[in-house]
Length: 222
Image (cartoon, rainbow, N blue to C red; front, side, top):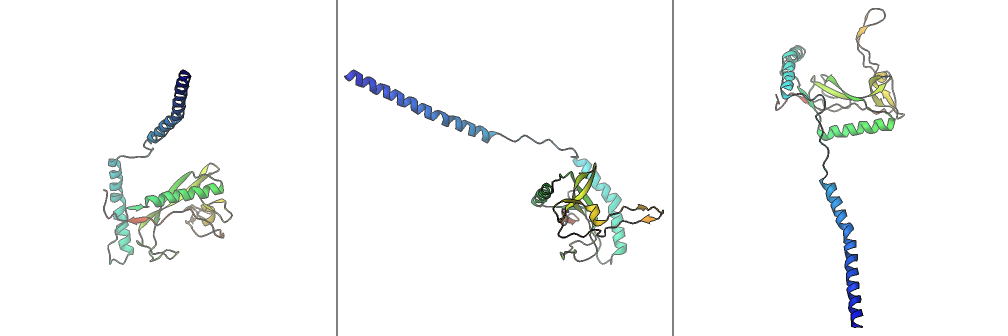
């Protein structure tokens, strides 16, 4: 009887240990998988096409100084009051978070309209010689050069800037503002650029980004 009891206890103990080992096995595997996920790193991003060297960027900056800055200063001196020397802007900057939000917003509106963004155009611009913008916001640097950004989409194989109409569809900017290139008209005379509104719609959503920080560099990189 004592031998049977001893054998039963030994068998029970061995079974308990085996069950414990089986229960602990999956935990070790989960721990290993979790560790592998944590140690997985993102694939490195190769430099995109268009990255230039510091030497080339310095050359481009100097070319603008040589070929544009003096002309702008002379032009503004002739049209200005002469009380304060005009210093041409050399850059326009948008905050990193603002730029990410703008791209996300443009993508959201394009998706809702069922179109794809082909590119972002950076148009050169010039602020008017006025104290305020049409929306009432102050013009910090009147007469300064700037840029504004326009998303484009492909229509009939060509890129066009677009906005979102009141009906939620993507519409071409050129059809809304009536832009015309300077050139020869059918009668041989000159036609001049026009940006007068050609189509009036209720509550269109513009996707044009402007009002960055355009100014002479406070601390020049070059």
